[in-house]
Image (cartoon, rainbow, N blue to C red; front, side, top):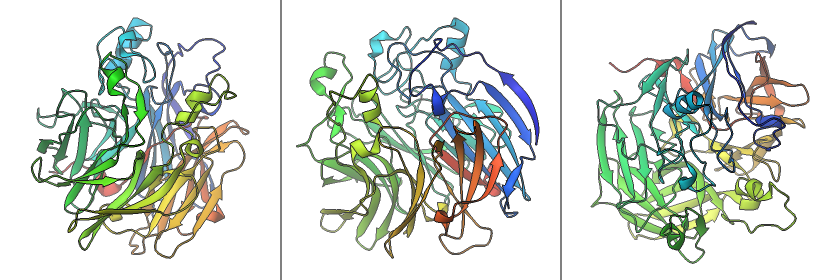
Length: 492
């Protein structure tokens, strides 16, 4: 492995920091590396000709008030596979907010669990006066990697191989800069379209849009809601986009006083909006489902007159505080899948009758799903998800669900080793849905190092078939994306 340093940064975090999501596995990375010919333990498949990208919350400055792990500055890690070899790079997302804070030498914006009134400047986000850290999600569209922020903001563009900064997306001047876009825009690999939504605190409270394969905003319509809501993800089928109005949202009474505190309204049904891919707002149809919150969807597809929708149902979206939880207990509960009761779930929306049915798919607590990319919006059999140790926002295992034949298999990472979201990479020329690989980045605390692990997607339980050494231990992280070689060139 040949390693060079692109840039070093100085941490402005407090000396002796003891925050659980800025220390240990979440210790921020301060060096941007370029590494070629990564050392490999095992056999790296020579048909991998792709890029694995992971976005990460990686704070350089302290928070104003309390820090939430979703607040950190965006850093992208990339592993580029080609002809049985692999290279690695990592770069901070050069956001406007990060540049302003580095220039000021201090934090300028409060995070999600503090009042926006605490911010020193106006900013971004659904509630405004937040820093758009662009640290949540990443996807490749029209040859560029796009990073996005969970409470809406700009879409920052990077070269998916070199990670060179390509500025903010403009979509020929039609980017919705007043609201931005939420994290989790959806790529339809069959059409090349990018579907997205945004939300805010003023009517109509939500919009839905479509970006064409060549990067033009082709469709943008309001999706009226009864008030400000907190959706996080969306889904789509061949003909429809699915958007959501959940039972967890900002308490209206507190919001009227400028307090942004979510509350789970147990007696208020959640709702699903079924929107024609290029329609709305008039053709929107709403379906009521049981009160819940869903952070991430697995997939959706059409089955006759029904839409099948799979995602992670939360039985307890707002856990009650525990008196013995300790100083970080409330923060850990917010992201603990066992506290939230997060399990894979299936909803069936009947377009003929307007009714909805639902049932659990499995009893295991898990989250952060991936599927075969070409099954997006189409019927799928397998889903892969990450498991977490109770009380922690860390990934300690991968589980594969067979949603047709039933059953599951799991790989548990060694103690102290934590993974990232693990996209499915189809094998070259494959036709079977599980004929391919899973790729993930791991943070190995006992060995003080990080690696990229490659699994056989049809045999996850056997463990990695290849492990690639990275130049340094990196911070733990979450959302990731796989882009095939064909997706790395802009449409002409």
